[in-house]
Image (cartoon, rainbow, N blue to C red; front, side, top):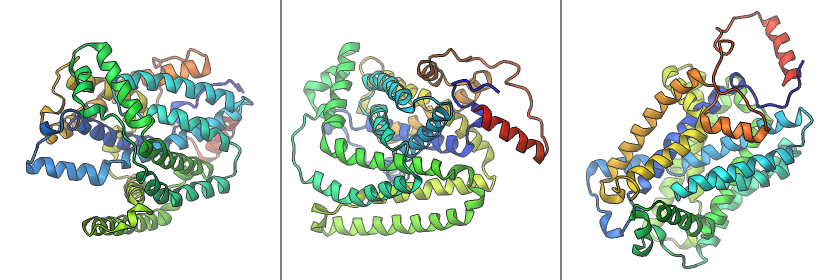
Length: 414
């Protein structure tokens, strides 16, 4: 059996992981496109329509921050899967992932030039730190993860009490000239400056959000350690318990935080559990999707989400590059001139189109184009992009005994 150093085959991927990635990608495009409603002078951002308020509420409840936290968990899970694949072949995972994250930084720089809210750079940075845990036990990873989650409200409160002045790039007339100019270099400068001032050095993001992200990555790492996503059917009871607990926690925190803000309670200066609300809501949604998948419901919809999830990196970068041509001066230059419902609806439309494109693309090709390039550069090998007849052969049902033999052989091979 060949022990060649190569990525895990597409047909070995866990379906629910790609489905969850697809769902998270929907939330990301809604959040990113909705942000263009606020890029511009504050006085121009006026929209009091009922539809816009309803859609903004939908985004706030189901998608805002829930999507990137879920995507971060799945990044940690995928990191661990690849780590095992590399280590099982006797390769040095530190060198491999150091190079892989360097490549991700390169993709992040390109994406940041088109979109000021890029998250790839954060994944690349935290991915390097995650390497410190690659030999850790599941127990150590879980304890570290839980400690970070417990610390988040205190960290958030402390950071919020530190008042620092940063340039408001996305609402400053001086910098907005770059966004609207129609010059490519001006546009790239605007986005890179905004990425630096609004994400890299602002403490609320640089520290608090990164602690949240790293905790989520560790949770994904732990999920892989216990083979969680491949055991959903046997964990149905625990999933249902998690569903109700996370819903109760989210509702309780939501009511409590609303009461605290209305009554201007002062405990926020030392304890801010806002991210607990985000994480409990995200956990409720993700658990619900897992249970629906286990019950074999919404198969057609989930199949489309799955193909979108297989091309997460391609679809994510394509969304951001497309937005540049729609909203900025290098394209249609409409920015925040439209009502909120327009950005929300446009995001849904772009995502639906990507679902069909992803399904068509993966019927002919093994990987998304960016995923393929990342693999080629990561492994230093030219993998076939286009599918061959061998890839498209029908799946033959075999007996349980043969399945066990095949499984044992695949373990040796991969």
